[in-house]
Length: 240
Ligand SMILES: NC(=O)c1ccc[n+]([C@@H]2O[C@H](COP(=O)([O-])OP(=O)(O)OC[C@H]3O[C@@H](n4cnc5c(N)ncnc54)[C@H](OP(=O)(O)O)[C@@H]3O)[C@@H](O)[C@H]2O)c1
Image 1 (cartoon, rainbow, N blue to C red):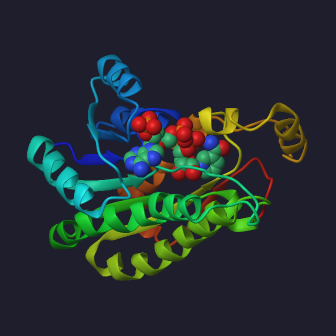
Image 2 (tube, protein in one colour):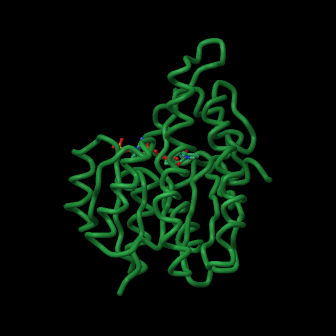
């Protein structure tokens, strides 16, 4: 029977590309989303991939959601923690709510999802967890103390959990994308984006499919010796 993978935020952007790439390898994929039902339903109709709505920042919702996926599709062997948000602002302007929302979604979501699936993976002696970090968690970014802290936290979380899973066949890795052509980056003002692209050695934004390719490798059988690593996919913008 095909292994089951959950991709959080898997219905659009980078997550959509990851869901499709994993499906192409023969996995049964469940893609989650937060609230954009229109995009999620169109995605499900187009791809045949099952979609589920829950908030990754909500611990109980992750427990219930993962249990529902397992009941519908089978034991969950792979989780890609891709769901993420930005709420940018310098610390002088950043509200506590915007700090908390970004930490709870980007970093808290990884914890909540791991709590739901890690015990089963350990028991079955096979699992793959891939956490989507960011170049801005590695290098920092003006106006993003919340996002940079959350993404940097993901990299530490990955290395710690990798140590807990290693003997049980559960690998835990991170991918740190640079600037990728998605809705999230489309929200950046054009003049700012132009300056960002000028600093990318390969001279362009990345494509979501280029991140998905890395995820496919980390989730493969042959990826079993790779754990606790962070794969930077950023066009050479930050060599870490
Ligand atoms: N784009 C980039 O250049 C870039 C660079 C580095 C890292 N990243 C990271 O890559 C990941 C994907 O980015 P993207 O650009 O593809 O983002 P995106 O286009 O904004 O899509 C975000 C996805 O996450 C879902 N989501 C957001 N909050 C959620 C929550 N609380 N619970 C469940 N799902 C939630 C969204 O669901 P709805 O559709 O329902 O809103 C959507 O499916 C994020 O973690 C982001 O931080 C992106």
